[in-house]
Length: 364
Image 1 (tube, rainbow, N blue to C red):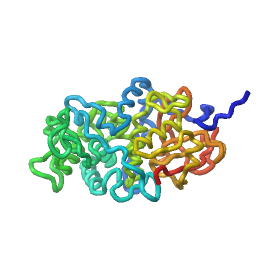
Image 2: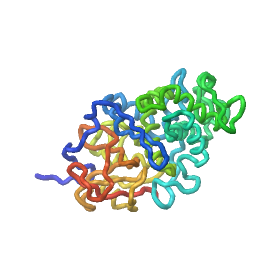
Image 3: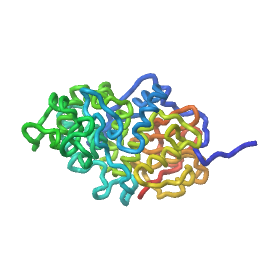
Image 4: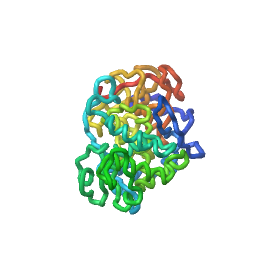
Protein backbone atom coordinates (compact mmCIF):
# COMPACT_ATOMS: atom_id res chain seq x y z
CA UNK A 1 0.00 0.00 0.00
CA UNK A 2 1.31 3.45 -0.91
CA UNK A 3 0.81 5.94 1.90
CA UNK A 4 0.72 9.66 1.17
CA UNK A 5 2.41 11.65 3.89
CA UNK A 6 2.26 15.34 2.97
CA UNK A 7 1.24 16.48 6.42
CA UNK A 8 4.47 16.34 8.38
CA UNK A 9 7.75 16.74 6.50
CA UNK A 10 7.19 13.90 4.06
CA UNK A 11 10.36 11.77 3.77
CA UNK A 12 12.34 12.84 0.74
CA UNK A 13 15.33 11.49 -1.12
CA UNK A 14 18.56 12.81 0.36
CA UNK A 15 19.54 14.17 -3.05
CA UNK A 16 20.50 17.68 -2.03
CA UNK A 17 23.84 18.71 -0.65
CA UNK A 18 23.97 17.72 2.99
CA UNK A 19 25.42 20.06 5.53
CA UNK A 20 26.85 17.06 7.35
CA UNK A 21 28.98 16.21 4.31
CA UNK A 22 31.06 19.35 4.67
CA UNK A 23 34.57 18.45 5.71
CA UNK A 24 35.57 21.84 7.05
CA UNK A 25 34.04 24.50 9.25
CA UNK A 26 33.47 27.74 7.37
CA UNK A 27 32.35 31.10 8.68
CA UNK A 28 31.79 33.39 5.73
CA UNK A 29 31.75 37.16 6.15
CA UNK A 30 29.05 38.57 3.91
CA UNK A 31 28.61 42.26 3.20
CA UNK A 32 25.44 43.59 1.67
CA UNK A 33 24.40 47.25 1.38
CA UNK A 34 26.88 48.27 4.02
CA UNK A 35 25.73 45.71 6.59
CA UNK A 36 28.04 42.95 7.77
CA UNK A 37 26.58 39.51 8.48
CA UNK A 38 27.73 36.00 9.17
CA UNK A 39 26.97 33.12 6.83
CA UNK A 40 26.33 30.23 9.21
CA UNK A 41 25.61 27.30 6.92
CA UNK A 42 29.20 26.13 7.05
CA UNK A 43 30.00 26.41 10.72
CA UNK A 44 26.84 24.59 11.79
CA UNK A 45 28.54 21.36 10.79
CA UNK A 46 29.96 21.60 14.32
CA UNK A 47 26.49 20.93 15.69
CA UNK A 48 25.99 18.04 13.30
CA UNK A 49 29.33 16.49 14.13
CA UNK A 50 28.83 16.69 17.89
CA UNK A 51 25.36 15.21 17.57
CA UNK A 52 23.85 14.24 20.90
CA UNK A 53 26.11 16.48 22.97
CA UNK A 54 24.88 19.55 21.11
CA UNK A 55 21.31 18.30 21.42
CA UNK A 56 21.64 18.44 25.20
CA UNK A 57 23.24 21.88 25.11
CA UNK A 58 20.75 23.23 22.62
CA UNK A 59 17.86 22.01 24.72
CA UNK A 60 19.02 24.28 27.51
CA UNK A 61 17.98 27.35 25.56
CA UNK A 62 14.42 26.27 24.89
CA UNK A 63 11.75 28.51 26.34
CA UNK A 64 13.75 31.67 26.79
CA UNK A 65 16.67 33.77 25.76
CA UNK A 66 19.92 31.83 25.45
CA UNK A 67 21.68 34.06 27.96
CA UNK A 68 19.07 33.24 30.55
CA UNK A 69 19.81 29.56 30.56
CA UNK A 70 23.35 28.96 29.35
CA UNK A 71 25.93 29.27 32.10
CA UNK A 72 29.31 30.85 31.59
CA UNK A 73 32.58 30.06 33.34
CA UNK A 74 35.24 31.98 35.17
CA UNK A 75 36.99 34.40 32.88
CA UNK A 76 34.00 34.57 30.55
CA UNK A 77 31.23 37.09 30.56
CA UNK A 78 27.58 36.34 30.98
CA UNK A 79 27.48 33.41 33.40
CA UNK A 80 23.78 33.19 32.75
CA UNK A 81 22.75 36.57 31.44
CA UNK A 82 19.44 38.31 31.70
CA UNK A 83 18.15 36.94 28.43
CA UNK A 84 16.09 38.47 25.68
CA UNK A 85 12.37 38.86 26.18
CA UNK A 86 10.26 36.03 24.85
CA UNK A 87 6.56 35.87 24.19
CA UNK A 88 6.69 39.44 22.96
CA UNK A 89 3.69 39.24 20.72
CA UNK A 90 3.05 39.31 17.03
CA UNK A 91 5.16 41.08 14.46
CA UNK A 92 3.95 44.31 12.97
CA UNK A 93 2.26 44.94 9.68
CA UNK A 94 4.32 44.38 6.58
CA UNK A 95 5.69 40.98 7.51
CA UNK A 96 6.14 38.78 10.55
CA UNK A 97 9.88 39.39 10.50
CA UNK A 98 9.79 43.18 10.25
CA UNK A 99 9.71 45.54 13.22
CA UNK A 100 7.09 48.17 13.93
CA UNK A 101 7.50 50.72 16.72
CA UNK A 102 9.06 49.20 19.83
CA UNK A 103 8.84 45.70 18.33
CA UNK A 104 12.41 45.93 17.01
CA UNK A 105 14.68 43.05 17.99
CA UNK A 106 17.46 45.61 18.48
CA UNK A 107 16.56 49.30 18.91
CA UNK A 108 17.96 51.65 16.27
CA UNK A 109 20.06 53.57 18.80
CA UNK A 110 21.56 50.31 20.06
CA UNK A 111 22.39 49.25 16.51
CA UNK A 112 24.27 52.53 16.11
CA UNK A 113 26.31 51.64 19.20
CA UNK A 114 27.02 48.21 17.73
CA UNK A 115 28.12 49.69 14.42
CA UNK A 116 30.41 52.22 16.08
CA UNK A 117 31.96 49.65 18.40
CA UNK A 118 32.42 47.10 15.62
CA UNK A 119 34.30 49.72 13.60
CA UNK A 120 37.03 49.68 16.27
CA UNK A 121 37.86 46.08 15.34
CA UNK A 122 38.65 45.42 11.70
CA UNK A 123 36.48 42.56 10.44
CA UNK A 124 34.10 42.34 13.43
CA UNK A 125 30.50 42.34 12.12
CA UNK A 126 28.26 44.75 13.98
CA UNK A 127 25.50 42.13 13.93
CA UNK A 128 27.52 39.85 16.22
CA UNK A 129 27.61 42.58 18.87
CA UNK A 130 23.90 43.16 18.29
CA UNK A 131 23.12 39.47 18.74
CA UNK A 132 25.16 39.24 21.94
CA UNK A 133 23.33 42.22 23.39
CA UNK A 134 19.96 40.81 22.34
CA UNK A 135 20.72 37.44 23.92
CA UNK A 136 22.25 38.83 27.09
CA UNK A 137 19.76 41.55 28.03
CA UNK A 138 17.30 42.21 25.21
CA UNK A 139 19.63 45.05 24.16
CA UNK A 140 19.51 46.59 27.61
CA UNK A 141 15.72 46.46 27.89
CA UNK A 142 15.58 43.56 30.35
CA UNK A 143 14.59 44.42 33.91
CA UNK A 144 16.32 41.32 35.29
CA UNK A 145 18.80 41.72 38.16
CA UNK A 146 22.26 42.74 37.04
CA UNK A 147 21.32 44.63 33.87
CA UNK A 148 20.86 48.22 35.07
CA UNK A 149 22.47 47.71 38.48
CA UNK A 150 23.74 45.03 40.81
CA UNK A 151 24.53 41.55 39.52
CA UNK A 152 22.70 38.40 38.59
CA UNK A 153 22.99 35.22 40.64
CA UNK A 154 26.25 34.35 38.90
CA UNK A 155 27.77 37.77 39.44
CA UNK A 156 27.40 39.13 35.89
CA UNK A 157 26.86 42.85 35.46
CA UNK A 158 25.42 45.25 32.89
CA UNK A 159 23.59 44.87 29.59
CA UNK A 160 26.43 42.83 28.09
CA UNK A 161 26.65 40.72 31.27
CA UNK A 162 30.33 40.91 32.19
CA UNK A 163 31.94 39.21 35.10
CA UNK A 164 33.77 41.97 37.02
CA UNK A 165 37.29 40.65 36.36
CA UNK A 166 36.62 40.34 32.63
CA UNK A 167 35.22 43.85 32.38
CA UNK A 168 38.20 45.24 34.28
CA UNK A 169 40.59 43.55 31.86
CA UNK A 170 38.99 45.01 28.72
CA UNK A 171 37.19 48.11 30.04
CA UNK A 172 36.72 50.67 27.27
CA UNK A 173 35.02 54.05 27.41
CA UNK A 174 33.14 54.57 24.17
CA UNK A 175 32.13 57.94 22.67
CA UNK A 176 29.74 59.53 25.14
CA UNK A 177 30.44 56.85 27.75
CA UNK A 178 31.39 57.42 31.36
CA UNK A 179 34.81 57.72 32.97
CA UNK A 180 35.90 55.44 34.48
CA UNK A 181 34.09 52.98 32.21
CA UNK A 182 31.10 51.22 33.72
CA UNK A 183 29.60 47.83 32.78
CA UNK A 184 26.15 49.38 33.29
CA UNK A 185 26.67 52.19 30.79
CA UNK A 186 25.39 50.89 27.42
CA UNK A 187 28.12 52.66 25.45
CA UNK A 188 30.94 51.34 27.61
CA UNK A 189 29.40 47.88 27.77
CA UNK A 190 29.13 47.52 23.99
CA UNK A 191 32.57 48.98 23.29
CA UNK A 192 34.11 46.73 25.94
CA UNK A 193 32.36 43.71 24.42
CA UNK A 194 33.88 44.66 21.07
CA UNK A 195 37.33 44.88 22.66
CA UNK A 196 36.95 41.46 24.26
CA UNK A 197 35.66 39.78 21.11
CA UNK A 198 38.37 41.42 19.03
CA UNK A 199 41.12 40.31 21.41
CA UNK A 200 39.84 36.75 21.08
CA UNK A 201 39.88 36.76 17.28
CA UNK A 202 36.39 37.86 16.25
CA UNK A 203 37.79 40.07 13.52
CA UNK A 204 38.67 37.04 11.40
CA UNK A 205 36.45 34.38 9.86
CA UNK A 206 38.56 31.63 11.40
CA UNK A 207 38.44 33.15 14.87
CA UNK A 208 34.82 34.23 15.14
CA UNK A 209 33.32 31.00 16.47
CA UNK A 210 36.01 30.69 19.13
CA UNK A 211 35.71 34.34 20.14
CA UNK A 212 31.99 34.02 20.79
CA UNK A 213 32.59 30.75 22.64
CA UNK A 214 35.12 32.57 24.83
CA UNK A 215 32.40 35.11 25.61
CA UNK A 216 30.19 32.35 27.00
CA UNK A 217 31.56 28.82 27.07
CA UNK A 218 28.62 27.03 25.45
CA UNK A 219 28.22 25.72 21.92
CA UNK A 220 24.48 26.36 22.16
CA UNK A 221 25.18 29.99 23.05
CA UNK A 222 27.48 30.36 20.04
CA UNK A 223 24.86 28.82 17.75
CA UNK A 224 22.18 31.22 18.93
CA UNK A 225 24.42 34.30 18.69
CA UNK A 226 25.80 33.54 15.23
CA UNK A 227 22.47 32.50 13.72
CA UNK A 228 20.79 35.58 15.17
CA UNK A 229 23.67 37.72 13.87
CA UNK A 230 23.13 36.28 10.41
CA UNK A 231 19.44 37.22 10.58
CA UNK A 232 20.14 40.73 11.91
CA UNK A 233 22.75 41.32 9.24
CA UNK A 234 20.24 40.35 6.56
CA UNK A 235 17.40 42.32 8.18
CA UNK A 236 18.55 45.14 10.52
CA UNK A 237 14.86 45.95 11.12
CA UNK A 238 14.17 42.42 12.32
CA UNK A 239 11.19 42.29 14.65
CA UNK A 240 11.45 41.12 18.23
CA UNK A 241 9.04 38.17 17.78
CA UNK A 242 10.96 36.94 14.72
CA UNK A 243 14.25 37.23 16.62
CA UNK A 244 12.79 35.21 19.47
CA UNK A 245 11.62 32.50 17.07
CA UNK A 246 15.01 32.40 15.32
CA UNK A 247 16.88 32.22 18.63
CA UNK A 248 14.69 29.33 19.76
CA UNK A 249 15.28 27.42 16.54
CA UNK A 250 19.02 28.08 16.72
CA UNK A 251 18.97 26.64 20.22
CA UNK A 252 17.74 23.36 18.76
CA UNK A 253 20.60 22.92 16.28
CA UNK A 254 21.83 19.34 16.52
CA UNK A 255 18.57 18.00 17.98
CA UNK A 256 17.52 14.84 16.09
CA UNK A 257 14.76 14.81 13.50
CA UNK A 258 11.76 12.90 14.85
CA UNK A 259 8.70 12.11 12.76
CA UNK A 260 5.77 13.84 14.47
CA UNK A 261 8.14 15.42 16.98
CA UNK A 262 7.27 18.68 18.70
CA UNK A 263 10.25 18.75 21.08
CA UNK A 264 12.15 19.08 23.16
CA UNK A 265 13.98 15.84 22.34
CA UNK A 266 13.16 15.75 18.63
CA UNK A 267 11.34 17.70 15.94
CA UNK A 268 9.88 17.25 12.53
CA UNK A 269 9.90 20.27 10.22
CA UNK A 270 6.51 21.71 11.16
CA UNK A 271 6.97 20.87 14.84
CA UNK A 272 10.18 22.90 14.91
CA UNK A 273 8.74 26.06 13.38
CA UNK A 274 5.59 25.74 15.47
CA UNK A 275 7.65 25.55 18.67
CA UNK A 276 9.89 28.42 17.53
CA UNK A 277 7.02 30.79 16.92
CA UNK A 278 5.20 29.61 20.03
CA UNK A 279 8.20 30.85 22.03
CA UNK A 280 7.42 34.30 20.56
CA UNK A 281 3.75 34.11 21.54
CA UNK A 282 2.43 33.24 18.08
CA UNK A 283 0.32 30.09 17.59
CA UNK A 284 0.74 28.15 14.33
CA UNK A 285 -1.17 25.16 12.97
CA UNK A 286 0.54 21.82 13.50
CA UNK A 287 1.46 20.56 10.03
CA UNK A 288 3.26 22.11 7.05
CA UNK A 289 0.26 22.19 4.72
CA UNK A 290 -2.02 23.96 7.19
CA UNK A 291 0.79 26.31 8.19
CA UNK A 292 1.14 27.32 4.54
CA UNK A 293 -2.63 27.64 4.15
CA UNK A 294 -2.81 29.91 7.22
CA UNK A 295 -0.71 32.59 5.47
CA UNK A 296 -0.34 35.46 5.01
CA UNK A 297 1.91 35.20 1.97
CA UNK A 298 5.34 36.85 2.14
CA UNK A 299 7.12 37.81 -1.09
CA UNK A 300 10.04 37.87 -0.88
CA UNK A 301 10.61 36.17 2.47
CA UNK A 302 12.44 38.00 5.24
CA UNK A 303 14.16 36.61 8.32
CA UNK A 304 11.66 34.83 10.57
CA UNK A 305 9.24 33.95 7.79
CA UNK A 306 8.32 30.36 7.00
CA UNK A 307 9.47 28.90 3.67
CA UNK A 308 7.60 25.95 2.15
CA UNK A 309 8.42 23.15 -0.27
CA UNK A 310 6.57 20.34 -2.01
CA UNK A 311 4.90 19.45 -5.28
CA UNK A 312 2.37 22.29 -5.34
CA UNK A 313 0.49 24.70 -3.09
CA UNK A 314 -1.86 21.86 -2.17
CA UNK A 315 0.90 19.30 -1.67
CA UNK A 316 3.25 20.99 0.79
CA UNK A 317 5.70 18.54 2.34
CA UNK A 318 8.36 20.62 4.10
CA UNK A 319 8.82 23.91 5.95
CA UNK A 320 11.78 25.82 7.36
CA UNK A 321 12.42 29.06 9.24
CA UNK A 322 14.05 31.62 6.96
CA UNK A 323 17.19 33.39 8.19
CA UNK A 324 17.82 35.64 5.20
CA UNK A 325 20.62 35.49 2.63
CA UNK A 326 19.33 32.21 1.22
CA UNK A 327 19.50 30.19 4.44
CA UNK A 328 16.96 28.53 6.72
CA UNK A 329 16.87 26.41 9.86
CA UNK A 330 14.94 23.20 9.37
CA UNK A 331 14.47 19.64 10.58
CA UNK A 332 14.95 17.82 7.26
CA UNK A 333 14.14 14.11 7.53
CA UNK A 334 14.81 10.90 9.45
CA UNK A 335 18.48 10.38 10.17
CA UNK A 336 19.35 14.09 10.20
CA UNK A 337 19.32 16.80 12.85
CA UNK A 338 18.03 20.35 13.08
CA UNK A 339 20.47 22.33 10.97
CA UNK A 340 21.04 25.33 8.70
CA UNK A 341 20.37 24.63 5.02
CA UNK A 342 20.63 26.69 1.83
CA UNK A 343 17.25 27.53 0.35
CA UNK A 344 16.01 28.90 -2.99
CA UNK A 345 13.48 31.72 -2.83
CA UNK A 346 12.29 31.76 -6.44
CA UNK A 347 8.85 30.10 -6.71
CA UNK A 348 9.13 26.80 -8.52
CA UNK A 349 12.90 26.50 -7.97
CA UNK A 350 14.12 22.99 -7.34
CA UNK A 351 14.87 21.95 -3.78
CA UNK A 352 16.07 18.38 -3.99
CA UNK A 353 13.11 16.36 -5.17
CA UNK A 354 10.73 19.17 -4.13
CA UNK A 355 10.01 22.69 -5.33
CA UNK A 356 10.01 25.98 -3.46
CA UNK A 357 6.31 26.84 -3.07
CA UNK A 358 6.36 30.15 -1.22
CA UNK A 359 6.60 31.83 2.16
CA UNK A 360 4.32 33.11 4.90
CA UNK A 361 4.78 35.73 7.62
CA UNK A 362 3.59 34.46 11.02
CA UNK A 363 2.10 37.16 13.21
CA UNK A 364 1.69 39.67 10.40
